[in-house]
Image 1 (cartoon, rainbow, N blue to C red):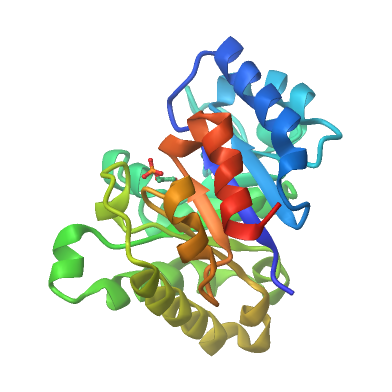
Image 2: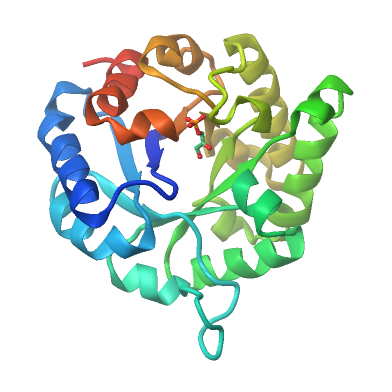
Length: 253
Ligand code: 13P
């Protein structure tokens, strides 16, 4: 049985006190959602330590939104995988399209970040997805295939067995334009096939999340699809009730 995951990527939103309040509301409302759902919150680095205290013992896991490609040393402004692991993070989002687009993250960088994450016991949530131009040109399958081959294929089978994938079409992120459930299923099934080509039967156990304008109103339809194992939520994760409702509508009470 694959894990059902609803993860909130807060991006660069909330001040620390607001983040603590948001996490407290999520903890308080978790009982209204099927306990089959694994909730993860990914606040900014600056709130990790305080949010860790809020979610401790609640069954809600903590993740970071990025980590450095290096172990430690003279890398001004970077935050290492060891640091976020020490604060209680279990997960780290890697390869988000915003990191690829605005901060020039390449597969080569991501290979090193993945290695750091695993070395410190973190589970990467590795993001893939095409932009609008690529989708319109019918290249979306090739784009995600390359993003997987260049990074995920470098993992050992043991590392792969822990990996979570998020498919996030760039044209659906923050735009209000969601992929249809059929579009999501089509590419999630394809992603699983690409994973299986390298890792065999283990690919049947990989949680593949959908991300991009996922909301309480579309979660049920998306998560009902066979290869959609949950969501990576941006905007709607900033309201506890919406975040929880995505889990509830998608996977039940
Ligand atoms: P939105 O849910 O705001 O579209 O963001 C999706 C996302 O990028 C999550 O990582």
